[in-house]
Amino acid sequence: MSSQVAIAEIHPENYRFLQEHIYSHAGIVLEEDKQYLFESRLAPIVRQLGLESINDLCALIQSSRLPEVGHQVVEAMTTNETYFFRDPSHYDAIRTVLLPRLMEERRDTKRLRFWSAASSTGQEAYSLAMLLIEAGLSDWNIQILGTDFSSQVVERARSGKYQQIEVNRGLPATLLIKHFRRSGADWHLCDPVRRMVSFETIDLRKSMRALGPFDLVFCRNVMIYFDAKTKMNILKELHGTMYRGGWLLLGGAETAGGVEGCFERQTVGNAAVYVAR
Amino acid sequence: MLLAKTLKELGYEVREAANGREALEVIEAEKSTLTLVLADWNMPEIDGLDMLKRLRRNPALSSLKVVMVTTETEIDRIAEALEAGANEYVMKPFTPDILVEKLQIAGIHP
Ligand SMILES: C[S@@+](CC[C@H](N)C(=O)[O-])C[C@H]1O[C@@H](n2cnc3c(N)ncnc32)[C@H](O)[C@@H]1O
Image (cartoon, each protein chain N blue to C red):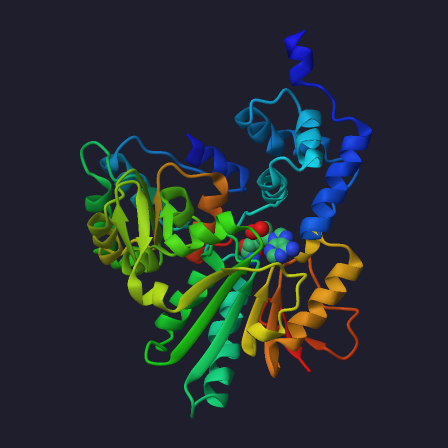
């Protein structure tokens, strides 16, 4: 009997409830075939709360007795995978073409502002900071803002602490020994890198214009989870935070098509980049 | 084991050696076709660092890439290997993805 309870199917009305709950709180679209994903991501919460099944969990959220559980469920359903220097062709493009141009444009003020939208645990923002230090911009006024919907990953990003498996991924060993210190099993980013970066909890579906203006924006591997309308609104908002001529970098499966006259696609080396018009 | 398996799946032909001395013999014999050496630090007879230093003293092997794959994770040790001429450094444990990314950083594109 008990094993039957443990593998109880999510009732169709609860499946719909979860889809709507996650869509309304994060804009993330989960299709009909994501049963396994709900089960693997929500089982720990079910256990932690001493419940019997995901159906019980749905009842608990609907009762509004523990509002934080609803939020916890949304966070559990987001995919946070990220790593240092993910999609190296983007960083090559920044190093060889985008940054030299930006440095030329801003040579009087020596001020540059960057944004890692949907920064997850921070590797994207910190990779950029390391790249800028290596490019000799230590004496520039640099601000890199990382934002994410999930306060849990924002906390982790702020800590600047990574596990061995995380610093093993994508990070050249020369940068590891230069910018990190080991402390027990963790690796801590050094202050010069951390000083350039700050993190905030922000939902990309809210108005973001007050955050800008930025010279370069990363918004990678997050819009794949949204529907066309949400994507379009976010692209317009991103455009509103950027200097004309600023650069937008998207994930490998994403494009900035559909928003008339906002972005122009260009190819730099092996990377597709978008210029704000 | 995992190393050899991963590399074979990437389409590489793999030669294995039980220790540093044997590795140096294999490298000497096959240097004309060899792209990459993956070296553990802790090997009997001649350890990985010692082997790396010997390879880097041989001008005929100057284009050979050497990546350390090891449980040694102290910063000083990593620095020592890079200074001795290692092209990249992989800390154990690792996954096939990590290895591929590290090889790319070292300029090897499987
Ligand atoms: C796969 S990660 C991408 C991380 C990084 N940009 C990269 O490409 O490696 C996706 C991130 O988007 C965040 N996210 C999902 N929906 C969001 C929303 N509506 N607003 C802001 N961030 C969101 C998730 O919390 C998650 O950390």
